[in-house]
Structure formats: C-alpha cells, structure tokens
Length: 190
Image (tube, rainbow, N blue to C red; front, side, top):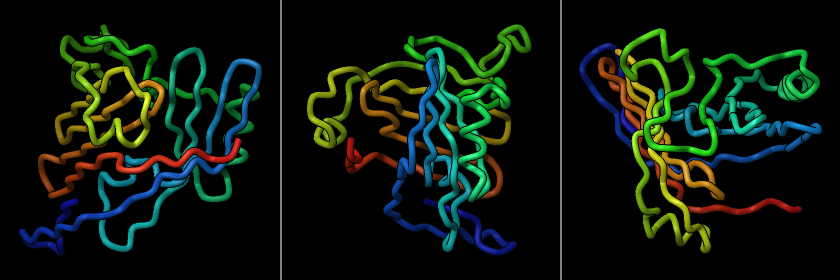
C-alpha cells in the first residue's frame, strides 16, 4: 500500500493484512445478492485508520455488479435488487461471465474506439502456485480484468471457482497504490 501523506510530496507505505467477509447471501429464482464487508476496491485509496465498507455483489445472468451500500442499508439494497425495485447500471458491472480474452464490458462499446472507461479481459494465465495452495483443486486460469481511465488503473485477477485472487490499483497523480493477493480462503458454514 502507498498513499500521499499531508499536502507535500511525502508517501506512506505499509504492508497490510486485509479481510473480505461475505456477511450474508440471499437468492431469488434468477439472482444472488451477497452482502460483503471489505471488498478489495476499499484498498484503492486506503490510509491508516480506514475501515472496510459494506457492499453488495449482485449476480444475475452471468453478470456481477458491485453496489455500494451505507452501513445498515445493505439489507434494503439486497431486497431492492432481488425484487427488481433497483436495477444496477453498466457503471456497476465488474464481471461478465464466462470470461474470454478481449471481452469489453461496463459501457457501450460504440461510445469510444479504445478500451478506456470499460472493463476489458486482457488475458488469462496459469493460476500462481501461491493461489492454488489457498484452494486446492482450482484448475482454471487467472483472468486479468482491467479498467483504465485517464487518472487511474484497476486490475482484478479473477479465478473461476475461487473469486478475486489479485487486486491492483494505481492512481497516476496523487499517490494511491495497492497490490493485493489472496493469501487465505475460509469457506463459511453451509
């Protein structure tokens, strides 16, 4: 982790153990919504004392949306998306499954003639040994899904059957950098 300190050119750096917790999961006939605390994107502008936020992952029709929630309102947001009162937008879309190299999503492809301001699957490679140790039996690839914008860059390393195994964020101006890897996985009760 790296972040700007004060108003000068100083940079703080720290290694950090971060936990992402699935708090609850609810399903309808065609969708699943999970309330999550500490989604990796919380690390993008992390500074000491920063607490994990609460988000909702909404999965429907092979699409995964990340919806931000205020603490205490996650249950209402889950209810609203599962009953159709709240519809996520293209800006909320973070994955479209199955992943294929070259796929572009999160905006209308006709809006621009490049891959900026959209998620693009840049490639698939072998799952690193350190990640395979976390959950034996994972045999698919580590997909690099990248969002580039003028001020910043985000990479999600996604492993089907496991989830987000790598998260990287870099801001091109004020220092804000994160490079996080999954080091442990504990399934909840069934």
